Image (cartoon, rainbow, N blue to C red; front, side):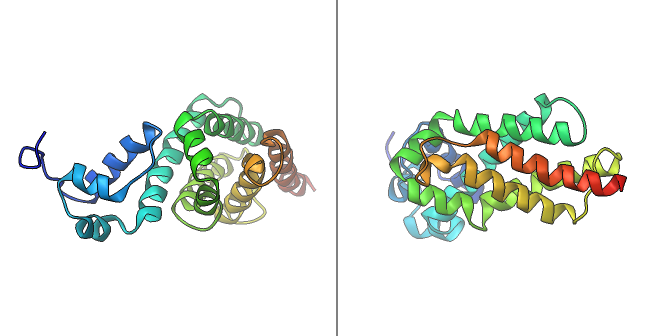
Length: 195
């Protein structure tokens, strides 16, 4: 298709969708190629989405949400068991995602920085866990000794450091260790409720 025939993108959402397609193919995100695909200039692309890291963060945050929502839909139990099953399913799904494997092999340090520091990915993950904590607390199935956003942030930090252990110098991801620590955190809150 010639540049004349190529439809022009209308805004940031089109750029994120195109970047998501690139990511899902397991390909590196190239801002020049993306601008060409969208029929816009690089300056327009950067104005719409920020830099490459910002765009990749947006793509990964959307992927985080899709993966988490699938995990919670299939999770079983209620209260702490539901939260643990959801996090187990979520972490295993993340590890089994071929495009993420390709990204972490190609750019492990970039991925770690984007996923484990405050930003779109961590923020969206904490928001989703916080919503689940609030839902379970509102239904009387879990007690929170700290506000849900604080607990959710702690859970995400615990899970991230163990989920990506293999990228941080350990031999393998440590999903079960993460779940044990989250269980301790949540069960400590439950124990304080009964005392």
